[in-house]
Amino acid sequence: MTTVVQAILNGVMTGMLIAIPAIGLTAIFAVLRYVNFAIAAYATVGAFAAWYVNTHFGFGVLPSAITAFVAGGAVGLFAEEVALAKLRPSGALAVAIASIAVNLIIENAIRFTFGNDLQGFDTPLARDWRFADLRIGPQQLQTALIALAIMAAVFAFLRFTRFGKAMRAVADNADLGKLMGMDPRRIAMVTVALGAGLAGVGGVLLGLDTAIDPMTGSRLLLSIFAAAVLGGLGSIPGAVLGAVMIGIGEELAVLVLPATYRSAVGFATILLILSLRPAGLLGERSA
Image (cartoon, rainbow, N blue to C red; front, side, top):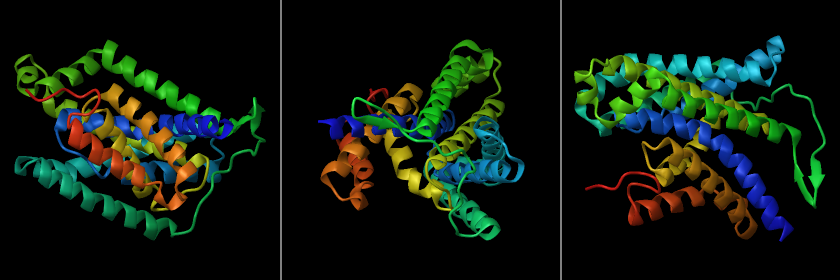
């Protein structure tokens, strides 16, 4: 029983970290109506930007996370303006496929710049805390608290700020928002920067517990996408719920399956949800 509880605890912690890039993915989908698979590359960009300032300039976790947000957002906005935005008239599928190409280009650029070796953050080592036969790492708890703070900030921004309300309005009806004096293009660009920046932060938070390499984002992509689909593409609360459920599911799966089959949880989740409820748990049903 302790093993199961430990797996659930680990799953919740991991899910909270997956939720950050999943929010970015679903926010971009809500406003622009396409799945941006380059979110994986933005996570890797953020992870390497944070690693660089951490190991070369001694930045702590929080300043490194801020650097990751800026780097991920800047690269995401650049990719959107240079490549993806021009393809929007061709439809969501064309843009989604192009985002895969963007992901590969950025991933290989990072590989060319930093090499293929694993890179580790320069953070203090600390013993796990133990209570009731359960254990949790101080670094794990710190990153989970940062993730919680980021989620709270995103929810507050969308609910209470004028620009956040405009983003929600454009996501609901871009044409009506334009008639009300909103600038859908400006809102779209800010959404891309925000979503890509969140992916960058997610990359560094998930990399702090282990190590990073140019494939860091690609390894996370399935879990991120599965979380967004499970919660309902376009629903930010759904992305959080889906991420936690995916995190718990992956950890519990390891108890009964070899670790190599862990990614199968994401595939199975996507298949099941798309079969039973295509809109996701918190997504709107089609009329």
